[in-house]
Length: 334
Image: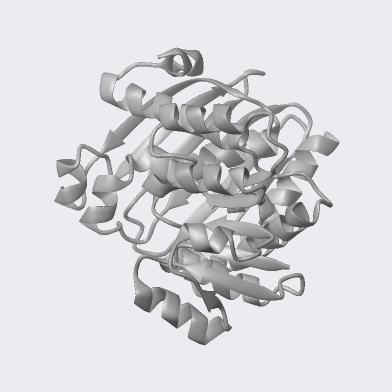
């Protein structure tokens, strides 16, 4: 099949590399406002370069991958759907939830699949955790702990446009908690602090946060996030039930150092970047998209899924600012 890529920044170039290595993909068509980025992709992957999204949609592509800036996501999703071309779009659907809801309304009733990029759903550990929950082998769940710790904060310009740590970073934890447990979040309480880069505080954001999520069956989920984790990129989950407990990310490249006498675990070089931690997951995610394009599977992460994670992020943002518990229904109806 022939896949178009809109946006060739860090993640777009990474997707181009991944797609070029998939057996199902015969050719790539790319476009980016920066001509040098498109030229580099053409030289590296043998991609065809076009000068606009409109030209790309008219270039006979079977599916498109939207890796452009967040502000462009709604228009590019809708353009793909109007052209009848399956769409993969990096999260979020839109910069704000109201815009995301408008996108959802616009595509409802259209028979064009849309997949939103939440790659943890394709990580082997999280897949195994979901299977363990679904099988009942853990018994009734009582506690979930989810962690995302970045080795260093993004640049100031990124922070200013990110929408805040809950919508930019924690939202991955929120999505994977929903996906692994199969439950919905009903209420949140969030806290945050600033002990690192001043530009994060100046942007009205926190660099380290914690959130307590109450799930609809009473399970408690604890989410921990930080922009400052010098030892590496740390993504983990613990799921505790009345029969058994399991962990995702408990492996040799875990960026933790044990101080227990005689303990040498973890002994590997710590993960230091999200692309390192999730290389295989990204490949599985885009392989899934080729199956969506081929019509052999439904979207594994819909706009509705992405918006649910977004509501949790908005609730946490409000909770942080107002120092109180917030229900999901409150932000959904705001």
